[in-house]
Length: 258
Image (cartoon, rainbow, N blue to C red; front, top):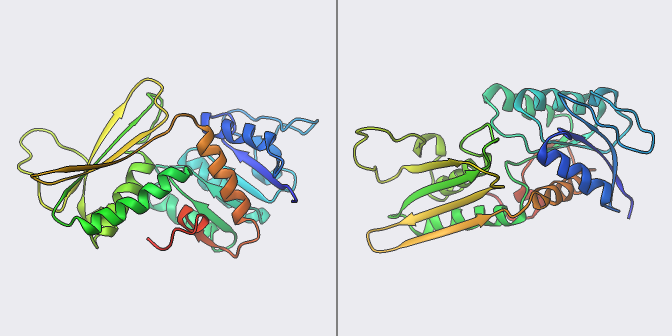
């Protein structure tokens, strides 16, 4: 099995660093270099420290865990070099998402708010439950460490989208992200979100389906960042050689259309 050559963008961060370490330890991947918008990291074995994907040695794929502005720059540089891209950066606005989509017209891109196998299976279950339980209220709760800068998490939004798709609607129409003061009674079709920040929580997500008589809760708890790193490396291996396009982890895991 030929090792694929990997550049990690955001390698000075917590998740990006976990990806870089996992790539270095993997026989199926060759860690070329890690770059970061703040501090550059050398890839070892005499490789130079680089601040730009545009100047990096040849590679097969870039794995990006940065911040929205940096993610757009990484996508542009990957497209210019012809590298495949796996991006897990969350919190993108419409213009930034459009830039990722534009890059996917040139190179294959896997984009996901969460690279955990368990979370992606959870999304499929949430969509199915939402379709089978039309009269139940839906609430998404997520908890992360104090350093996370976006809210709700990308994973929570993905779970909300899965529930909305199960109901034949969109999260844009049904999502409710703030409750404060005299907000009135809950509407039948809203998908509510609650956010917890504190400590060193890697990532907890719950989706509750509630009726007057029972509550069904689908949950996932991350116990380390290793699962995200391994999932990103799995996606990286899958995307190399694919046709240009914007793919999801549902494609990677063959879970079917959402």
